[in-house]
Amino acid sequence: MRSVFWGLLLVLAACPAEVQKPVIVDAAVELVDAGPIDAGPPIPSSLEPTVIAGYPDGGTAPVTAKAEMEPLTSLTVSLPIKLKDFRIRLIDFREQVVTSDDELLADGRTYLINLPEPLKTGRGYTLVLDAELGPIVTDETGGTWNDWDLAFRIAGDVQPEPAARKKPAPKKKKK
Image 1 (spheres, one colour):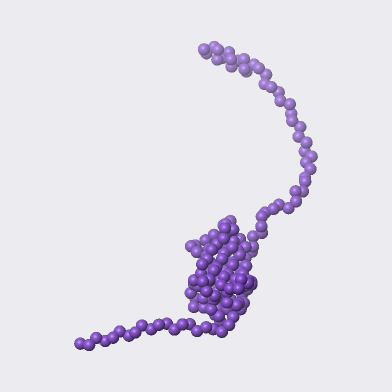
Image 2: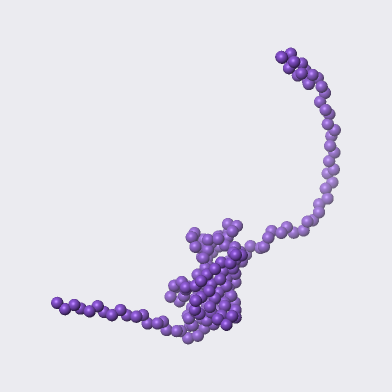
C-alpha cells in the first residue's frame, strides 16, 4: 500500500502544472455621472411640528406661537419626522393636562387631539411635546430632539371658574 501511495505521489509531482495565460486588464475606465444620490427626505434641523386647530363648525386654521384663537374642539399636530418615546399634551392655564381623546395615526407623524368641549375663552393654553419614558425625545434613526411647546390663547372674555361646592361644617355633638 505504501508503494502505491509513493508511486501516485511521484506521478503527480512529475506532471507539469498547467500554465495559465496572463490576463490583460484594460485600465481605461469611463466614469459616468449617475446624478445626485437620493438620501431620502431631509432631516429637519429643529423639531417644528405644524399645528392645525379644528373648530365646532368644521373650519380649520393654523396655530402659531402666542396666537389668539377662537374656541376650538380639536388639534392636529403634524410631525416633520417619526418620533419614538414621546407624548403630546395640552396644558391649561392652571398647568393641568386638558382632558382629551388622543390618537397617533398609522403614518406615525400625525397626532390628533379631540376635545370633549371647546376650550375656555380668555385663557392661555400650551401644547407640549416631550419624552414619555426617557429623558429625551428620540426619532426612529436614533436622533435626539429637545422638548417643544406652543403657547396660544383663546379669544374672548375670561370665564369665571365655577365655585367649588363647600362641604357643610360638621355639627357639634351635645354632651
